Amino acid sequence: MARPDGRRPDQLRPVTLTRRWSIHPEGSVLVEFGDTRVLCTASVTEGVPRWRKGSGLGWVTAEYSMLPRSTTTRSDRESVRGKIGGRTHEISRLVGRSLRACIDLKALGENSIVLDCDVLQADGGTRTAAITGAYVALHDAVNWLAERKALAGKPATVMHRSVAAVSVGVVEGEPRLDLNYLEDVSAEVDMNVVCTGTGDFVEVQGTGEAGVFARDQLDALLDLGVLGCAELTDAQRKALAE
Image (cartoon, rainbow, N blue to C red; front, top):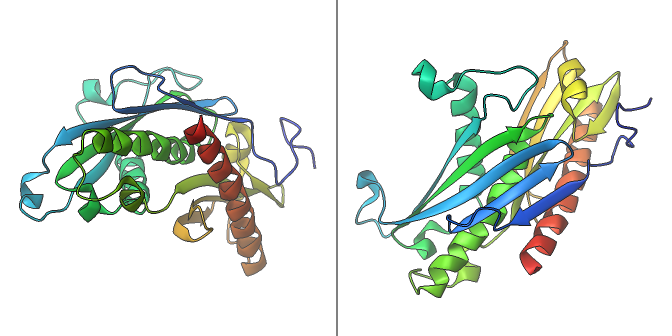
């Protein structure tokens, strides 16, 4: 069955990771999954939240948001509405959990890094693009700290694994990798897979949107997710080598 953009079922959209996209943050990456574009910035501050002081541990957290016209119709800014939506909270926490899986907070020392993931244009997979790009931004922020001898450990110890994420789903009975918006809204099964660079799972979020799904479908989706994350890990390595 043909996909809307002609890709194979196991094919990612074109992926681009542009480092140092913004001149002010200690780390910044514009990540593009096809027509989905997310700006990920990593901001370093000395010290940690009050509840963390004296522990010798650092802290990494994330905030996710969408620009008002990142989608086909304009949405009000959540700051104007005066309330952060449940979806925004959920994705922010997912990004934070995923990135803390790749960092040794003791080796980071009592430093904090905030990852801001702002969706400039949405065409499906915004949260997985955010995680994939935020890893590269975090890597650059840690190196910034290392250059200033502000880490408690070596950079290789602080960033002890990589993390990437991709969406998968069942559309018209077919397991597919990296869903765009048209596929996402019609998917019978929708899933997000977060993996380390060695293929271990950090988190799996999946639901049957139009009913239940079988074990063999789950296995097929996980296989696709691992495949996609491996390709994204390679893209991250190439970006960091530039």
